[in-house]
Length: 251
Image (cartoon, rainbow, N blue to C red; front, side, top):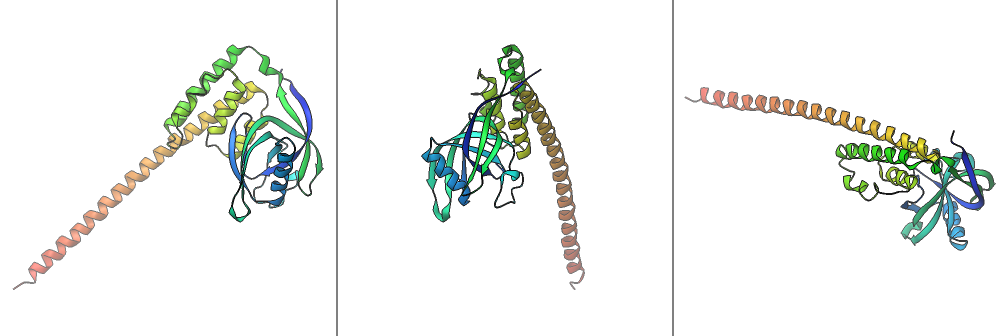
């Protein structure tokens, strides 16, 4: 049985992310405007550039508290900060590791929490199992990309030879256009084997949805083409009848 392992515990400034999940070992740009988030970011920049990012459960909440956050988030390193007009701050962050909120420290002037890094002892298991799962993920991704024009099928090429299977799985998940809750569930899934199996299931489901959507679009297009053709023929008949009517009226 896989055992969840809690590693280093630390107290970090915390950013509540709206509709955003960051995976370990991936880079992401996003904009900030809330004062609490910017204050947390500034504190992180002054203290080793490390911040904890957790997704809001409800993106409509303007002043989130700890009860409004997912318990599992990502310890991140702030790579770049750019101040934009209208009070916006654009941030480039790099995910470091999964972590869970252990204790809420404070909510003003910014969120701060004690978090513990998460890992699973299954990552020390035999590589053959993970290589098989990796190959299946690559195969399912190729099917998925064939049905999704917004996904570059070549994206998988630099990833498929990665020997760190956890980084591979998170990198694929980060590049997929999934429902945000699916991404959060993948982040919650610390144990590698379960995470890889979950990603395979999600890819299969998304491919089936895309294929069904394609069938629906083809039927809709066929109906539109048929209706347009019928409309054109009706208009053509009207013109012919009008022309014939005009000729009948000539003496």
